Image (tube, rainbow, N blue to C red; front, side, top):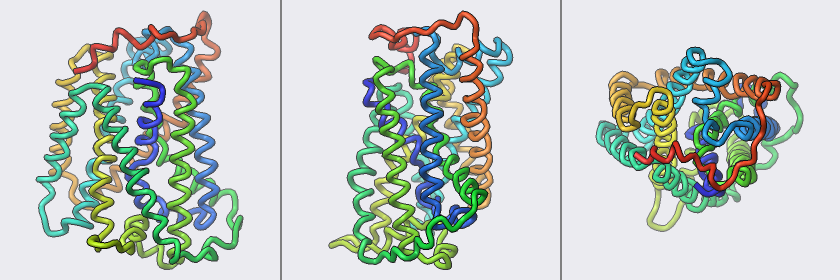
Length: 372
């Protein structure tokens, strides 16, 4: 991977399916002051990313992976337990994105159709991409990012004439607890940044990629801010409470020649974004499994696909998906915002740690076999 590729990988991880309804969650906290929470959350995530770069940069070239770091600092057995937790976390994140997207398509596009066909199609494409290795997954992240930023994001500005800026007033009208409640919700949207711990060894000259990682955080923050301000300027607070998917409701009012339901087009393009998220999480889990137990990634991938099929049969309604999403968010909150800073601090006081300067040869020769 070139350093610039980390921009696409992190952007896909930071902007997930939550973009469709994160404004609705703001009603339980900062409401129209939610833009403050978005900015605060972005600074916290940027700090966590800096910690990960420092942590990974202090490892030897062949040991700069999540699996090896956990085993080195906590021992073989405790480290293995933590690695398995991360693997399950990555699979859970992919399954949440998969089920959420299929559920949205069923509600908005195919309310009377069975979702088996689209579910199987997504799984087949995801399996093909993950089996192609990190380069195929990165390519999917590239297209998922470009299609959203170039074809979907500009469409939101077509509703500018319907906006009411007064809806954002009064500014700074909420206390610190309300601001923090919404900040915590936004931090949940950013928990995908932990994928950096897995893709880092594949980056050529990783020390040059940190600027692209920050660029991904800035881009994601701008996207969230635009969708937040437009939604709150279009809907009143009372109207917002009646719309579970504010982003889709906002896009649905756009009218263009030959296209009367713009949200159908957006959801179609959004499939590339969801495929990128699904494949990235599955690849991370399979790669960690390979390093932890020397199991071929394709075997782990097949097992994950079976899990997905079982989830399709079990998870049926919105409440179940929300419960599953809540579990994923809580686990991510502990792993990304509590465990990683703790690991970072522990690495700073590690004796005989030694810092190295990555060179062109640190592209992880041991991991190049993970192209399967």
